[in-house]
Length: 247
Ligand SMILES: [Zn+2]
Image (cartoon, rainbow, N blue to C red):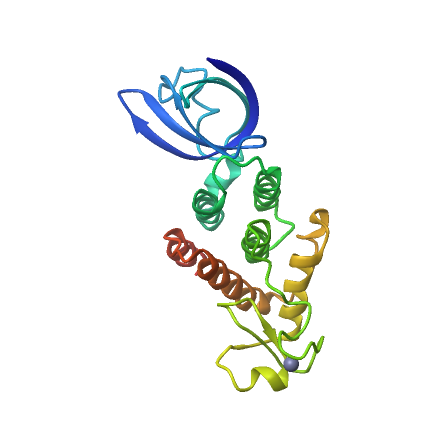
């Protein structure tokens, strides 16, 4: 039996037995762990708060034959205000769905946790529009997973910028006015191209720090969600709920 501590955030819970939970934790050091939390549904359980959705904790785990148990959960942040705002809540749930379907199994890539925590802290504040947070999260997940779209220049002729540009949501290719005209990729406002370049090429601390006209945030995040679904070949179920909640 191995005992270890790990920081992590709860991205899914499932009821099991009378008062137990199966908790999916995105950890800093071991990817996503699926662990039993005995008695955690009980209101008086010391695990109750720490094992609820979006709780960020220092967890104490034990592992035996690849079965994990949570013994303690030292809460660092509950992101409680997400529960008071339907669009933010559904967006955070959508982030969890994306993580469950994209984080590689058993890998210890800390960046996924860092990205998720940053996105949730920003969602709880009001300093960034939620569609901007969504777009950054989606495109950064693609980048972390090795699917950074090659948008530094036109994929065919290498032009950096023309007055009209096109983005192919299947391949992630950017095309200039001349090369894109013949295909069926949609044209993209240059400010959206600049925003996507910012998200893909900036150092991590700066990925959320850009401004975009609010009317362009929706076209930006429609491209990023389509691209992300295409590279993973999945439909994210919670997207529909999110768009219903923001209308
Ligand atoms: Zn070109």
